[in-house]
Image (tube, rainbow, N blue to C red; front, side, top):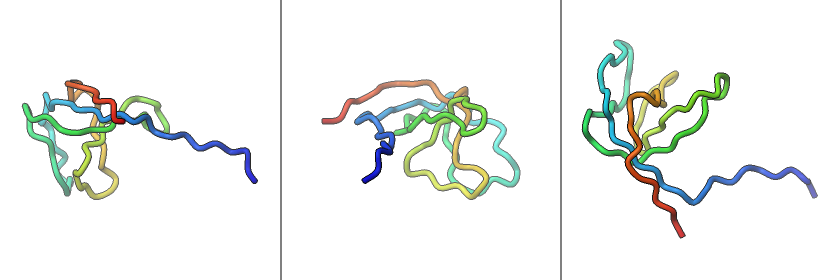
Length: 82
């Protein structure tokens, strides 16, 4: 038996509104958020830098993309799940 405890995510659903949909990279393949729309998101720290990144749930993007900078979104609501 191991004493390792894996982190468990909080039972929380986050929603954020896209405020900046400009400067889409030329080689980007995948879904891109539209300004003014609200999305279900998950905010996680970047592995190396620790800066928050926004992952839009249900979006598809080819590597190395898949997360958006936090300045592109404003938090709208947090819904605690039971």
